[in-house]
Length: 373
Image (cartoon, rainbow, N blue to C red; front, side, top):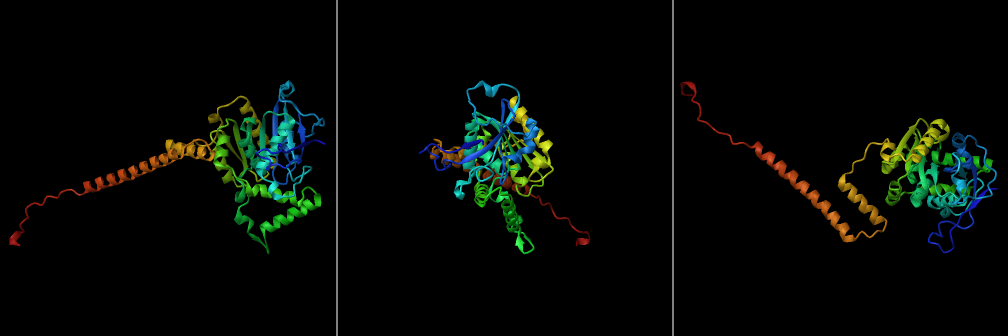
């Protein structure tokens, strides 16, 4: 059976992020130079991408010669005109390994699993598409190795934490129990009956969702990488709210396009043809290297030179660059002085207009009333 074993070199800087020996089950579909890596969400398996695999490749029957991995320097990966897809089970799900500790499940660790999969397949780069938690993982991957991403599709994405589920929705009572309790009980009942996912796997993947966060530096790395992004979302998604997907798309403009479809959290199944068409358009636009400003459908963001300068300083400070602290303070002082000057000018203008309102009034001789009155 096809497995990719993840892990880092002993003593490496990120040795704590991936435990050696975690095996990731995968399948590939189709053949061709266009490579697509599909990353599924919470409690999903590689089969969950069935509608997209069949729509993009033409069949959902997997390749069975999975024993030989690719070679980045081989011409075989570049011949033909078709599409090859890889879909896999995240750690904690399906036929992949199930670490027992919650700390072994984060979107960064799982992004390293996906990068290991690219290495295993011999794919130097690929179009990376993720759904829900898989979209969070895809974001982390894109920030970690942007040079290996040809395009990025984020389906029903959210920023993690409380954004995954509206807190008020989870705490709402349905009869004697909260919706959180009911959903969890139903989920455990289903996975126990099917044997699809263990409690450790479910709790670990939930932990990955709740602890997920994209820093400004990570967003900037994606933003400046140059590849195109499609944010595809169901308008009626109550798990990953549309508002947060729009906000992420806005942060990634002009490279991002926002696509809103009539559907919920499983818009990839509800609106299969529209989703597949959006993915094919993303691939085609990336291949012809369309200008991001022609790709985006978001309103142009104008932050001005001050906003641009401050954003650059924030990114450099977070990234640990050689921006000096005195320079940082000087820039802050510059902004503060401009602010004070603006206040002074407004006060001066207000005073000037107020003085103009007080005009000198000439008093003429009094008029005598008739009959000496």
